[in-house]
Each structure stands twice: as structure tokens, then as C-alpha cells.
Image (cartoon, rainbow, N blue to C red):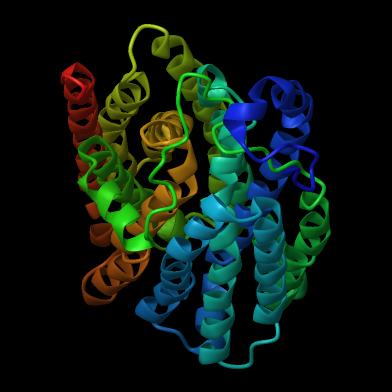
Length: 432
């Protein structure tokens, strides 16, 4: 049976004939999926620079402002398990295209909101579309490239996070100042409709095409509940995802509140607070993500736990820099500390996502990514922005952000633990 991209469905039977075609199209697929990921994060981070105007015009408390991010993330994480199973069983390119269309329309509708609850509903709807892309795209990429190159491939793919996030900060701030916050949502939403059509032209190869040393699991068609329970019981995977949740808690809270922190606590002018922090995120994200992907692939030649160990080392090293960044009062001190902390945090972006797809069977990768998405947002950035907002309302923003370094430390320690669990599993005798 041949799929719409010309690749045969049974990976084991057609691996040698399909692999050259997949290799030829892999670069195009990486480019398209990376562009979509960039737009994905531009859409997410167009909101933070709009917060001051939204608070003034819609009379929002800190908690309500932070809850806009939670609305998106709660829907995102709840829809992720459904799209994970679709990604392991159905057409991945069609599901991604549908998701992009939904989130683009919802973003544009955010600009039409006349009251808080309309904006809240529109941001929640964005989560439906982005969950389709966020869960399925990494599994699709894993079938475009072999295991030995995935650290660098995922580094390129996830470079879209800092670039897209920074564009969200910068474009959101500039458009808001020139045309108002509604226009910022329109600009962020419309391009996605073009990318939705483009993704339909990408190949959807057989699951496990590039894993020549791995057989597609015979249990990949087991009931959904049983599959997810099996992932929860996979110790190295579970610890990796819990560490990712702590990491996401820290980055999500920091990303959402940092422009406001610089403006309100450090008295940085509004434009500098948004564009300056955006520039830091772009540069550190680009460099840190690329270096992390390259180092992870090089280290992988000597250790199967390279991705996890590297992520743990870089994240723990970021803790003291984060503390200085959030407590120092002199720009000559806190700006370099912000740069160092962000640089070290972005090192783990490619390796940790590569670790997640490598820890599970090829036919279960979309589900594994989906469960990861569910967990990291439920325990991570779905709660950190409103929690920081609540502490800000009760005390101060300067005090509230100090929960971030503690979460960073927890992430690093959990990834060290996951590496140890993975190493123990590799040494355990296999059943005959």
C-alpha cells in the first residue's frame, strides 16, 4: 500500500527503497516545520508585550493577565493526547495542517475581543491548533533523519523557539505602540494559513524509517490508556518529562513576566524592556540551541545518555546566573547574568527533545511527545505565569520571580536521575 507521498506503509519491507526518497526530502521538511515552529512561538509570545495595554484597557489584574497564558496551555495540554494517537495512527501532515489553520484563525479572532472573556476564549482555542503541531512534528522529524543526527536536527527545529519568541516580543511591542494590541494579533495570525497549505506537500514516511536498529513495536496499536500507562511506567522517560516540566515552569514564568519585571522592578523603559529582552533571547537561543545540539551528537558517540547528561549539566550551571539576573540591581550585572542564564538554558533544548523520541519505540513517538506536552504544561508554564502573578499581587514581582531558579535546579537534578535510570536499563539483562 502506498501513501500520498509515494512511500510505502510497511517500514520493514520498504526501508531500502524509501530511505533515499526520505533523505532527499528531509531538508525541505525540516525547513517547513521549523518555519511553522517559529510562527508557533511568535504567536505565543506576542501576548507578553501587550500585557500593560491589555491591563489598562480591559482592567486586568496580574492573575487575570497570567491566566491568558493558562487558557491557551490548558486546552493545549488536554488536546495533546488525542493528537498524539492521531500522529501514531493517521496522516501526520493533514493533522498538522488542520492544527495550523485552527490556531491561525483563533489568533486573528483574539484581535476582535471586546472584553476579557472573549480574549480568554480565543487564546484557549489557539491551544487546539498548536497541540496538533506540537505533538506530531517531532515524531515526523524523527522519521526524516537518523538517530545520529537528531541532536543537530532538533537544535535547528527548536532554534525557532528563541527566534519566534523574540519576534513575538519585538513585533508585539512595536505593533502595539504603532497600531494597538488588536493589530498585533492580526499580524501574528494570518501567515499561518499559508503554511497550513504548504505542509500538505511534505512527505509522511513510515514510522521508524530511519531507525535501522529498531523494530516498530508490535504493541503500538494497543489501547490508548494502556499505551500511556506504559509510558508512565518507563522510568527514564518519566523522569525526563518531569525534569522538562520543571524546566518549562521556569522558562514559561520567566518569558511571560520578564518584560514587566524589567519595566516595573528595574525601571527599564518599555521599548527597551521588550525589544532588549527579545534580542537577548534571539542571540542566546540561537547560539545555545546550536551548541547544545552539536555537543549532544558528539557526546552520543561515546554515551547513549549524552543528551540527558548534557541537559542536566547545562541546567544546573544556569542556576547561579539566574539568581544574579533576578536579584542584582545594576544593569552592568543583571544584563550579563540574563545572557548567561538564557544561554545555558537553551543548550538543553535540542538534546532533551532528542532524548524523549529516542527513549521510546518509533511507532509510539507522537504519543510520547503528546504525554510530554501534557505533563510539561500541566506542571509547568500553565501554572507559573498566574502563580507569579498571584505572588506579585500579594507581595511584589521582584519576590515572585525568585521561584524560577528553584525550578531550574529541580530540572537539572531530575535529568541527572533520568540519565542514571537509562544507564541502569541498558545494563539490565534483556528477556530471551
